[in-house]
Amino acid sequence: MTTIEAPAQPKRKTLYRGDPGMWSWALHRITGVTIFFFLFVHVLDTALVRVSPDTYDQAIETYKNPLVALMEMGLVVCVLFHALNGVRVILVDFWAKGPKYQKVMLWFILAVWALLAIPAIGRMFFYLFTEH
Image 1 (spheres, rainbow, N blue to C red):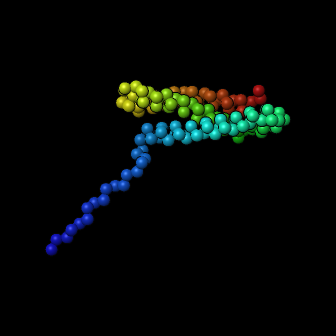
Image 2: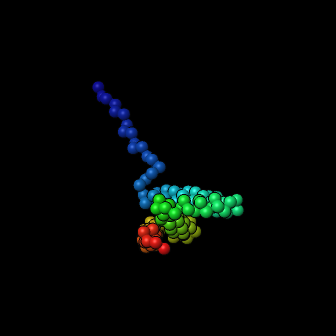
Image 3: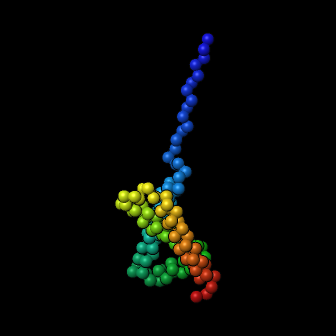
């Protein structure tokens, strides 16, 4: 008598593959949404000038605290990554050799991002802890 074994089930595949390109894709969307919400709040609080200058001044005063300074630093990091990665995405889409070099370009933009973000954050910390 022979036994029949069930065929081995293939491993379940997910959308996430663990590739740096996937992280880049996800971070590009996250930073884009972050920038969108900042711009939304910025337009609303700037519109207060027309409605009530005193309310606008009060809103601006609430922004002068360390928590908002940290949020501004995060915004700088988001804008830099989004802009540099956007250039990479354009090159991948419109340059014939773009797909071939997309990982190299990703590591390049991450290096440029770090070279720009670290001094910018350092300068913002300097202004946060000193009176200007």
